[in-house]
Image 1 (cartoon, rainbow, N blue to C red):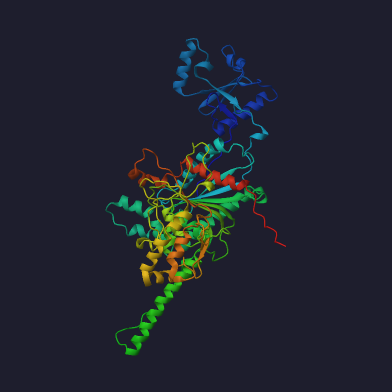
Image 2 (image 1 turned 30 degrees about the vertical axis):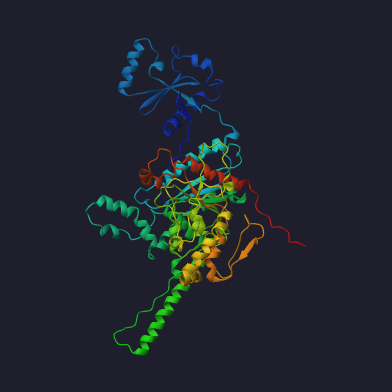
Length: 583
C-alpha cells in the first residue's frame, strides 16, 4: 500500500507568503488566542492602509506564548508576531533594538489568523462528474510511486487547460486517479534476480525492472496474476471513491481510463475478457516413430494434416472471438472512454489473429457495448507505439493519423470534421509486400497532405487491383479463404465519385475476387478516428525524441486539452434514444 499523505489544515498564516504554520504550533497559538481574545473584534481588512501603517513600536506585548523554538507576542487582537528563540536571532534582535529598531520590525514575522481571501459557500469545487483512472505500464517496479507523480503532472496540465478553455463548465468536474498495480504483485519473487549475472548489473537490473514486465505478461504462469491485480485495484479505487462520494453513482457519474504502454494491453484484456488459455489446444504426445507400419505412417500423415487444418480453424476462431467479451464484466463500472498512450496494443492484437475488416467500426476490435470510444494517442517517434486503424480497415495504413491540435491553436477544426489525408497517394494498396496486413507506425518522413477523397482513390485503383488479384492466382485465393477480413458474401459500396452511367454499388460474392473487394472497401471511412498523433516540435531531434517520447505524454498540454475535449463533449451530448418503430 502507498504511504498515507497527511492533510494540513491551516489556521495561522505567515504574512507575505501566506504559507500556513506547522499544524502543532498553529493549534497551540489558536487555543491561546481564543482564551485571551475571544469576543474582541479584528480589523475590517487585512490589506487596509491603516493596518499597514500601524506599527507596534510604541506598544508592549499584551500577551505572549512560549513555544519549543519560538515565542509569539500579541500586541492586539490582530497584531501577532512570531519570533525565533535561536541564539543568533536573540543576538541580532538585541543589536537592532539598541540601534533604535523595534523588536517586531527587526526580527518579527507577522501572523494572520485565516487566509488572505475569505471563504464563501461558492468556493467549494463542483461535485465530481467524471473520474479518469490512470494506469501505468512497465518500469513501475524500478521507480515505485512514479504513476502518482505522472498523474499529478497530468492533472496539473489538465487544470491549466480547464481554466483556459472550459471555464464555463462550472457544474462539471473531472478527477484523475492513479492506479498502481505492479508493486503489490509477487510474481516470481526474486528468482529472476538470483539468476542475473553480476556483470553490468546496473543495466541488467534496469531491464529486469522494466522490460521483464512484458515477459511476465506473456507468460501463462503470471498473466492471470497481473490481470487480477489490476482488476482488483481498479474495483477497489472505484468502490472507495463511490463510498466517499455517494452522489457520484446517483447522478450518473462516468468513468474513463487512460493507460500507458503495456497498461493499455492489460486494460484492454480486462475489459474484453480475453484469455489465451481458452484458445490453447492441448497437444497430444507424439507417437514413437521408431517402429511404424505403412498403415500407421499414412494415419499419422493424415493426423498431421488434420491438426494443421485444426490450427487454421482455431486461428480464425481466435480472431473472431478476440473482440467479443468472453465472460461477465470484471470491472464494476462501464468505461466511457479508453485513452491509450504510447500503446503496443496493435501488435498484440495482430499476433492474436485480428485482421482488417470492412465496416470501419470500432466494434471490430473493441465493442462499444464495452467501451463507448477508443483513442490511440502516440508521438510519431515513440518506438513502442503502433497504429490501430489499419487493423480495422487495411487501407488506413496509407492514411495519416489525425493530428492532435496545439493547445495554443486558435479555432481549430473539430476532430470529427477532420478529413482523412493520404501519406502516399501513389502507394498500391494491394502490392505483394502488403498482402498480409499488420499495424504500422507513422513514418518519420515529412508528409504531403492531399485533398482527394478516399472514394475517388478507391475507384482509381480498381483496374490495377484486378490485375494484381489475378496475378496472385491460387495463393491469393487461399489467403482470401482463410483470412478473417474476407467473409463470404462481402459487399462494399462506392458512394462517392461514381461516374455517370455506372452502377453506384457493386457486390463481390466470389472469394477469389477478394482483391477487388478490398479495393472497393477502401472507399469506406472510419466511423470515428482512433489514431491520434502528437505534432513534432520544429527543433526536435528525432533521435533524441525516440528516447524521450515514450514518457513525455504526462506533461503535454496538447494531450491534456485533447482529453478534456472528448470528456466534456460526451458530457454535453444527450444519450441516444431509440427511434420509434415505423407504422
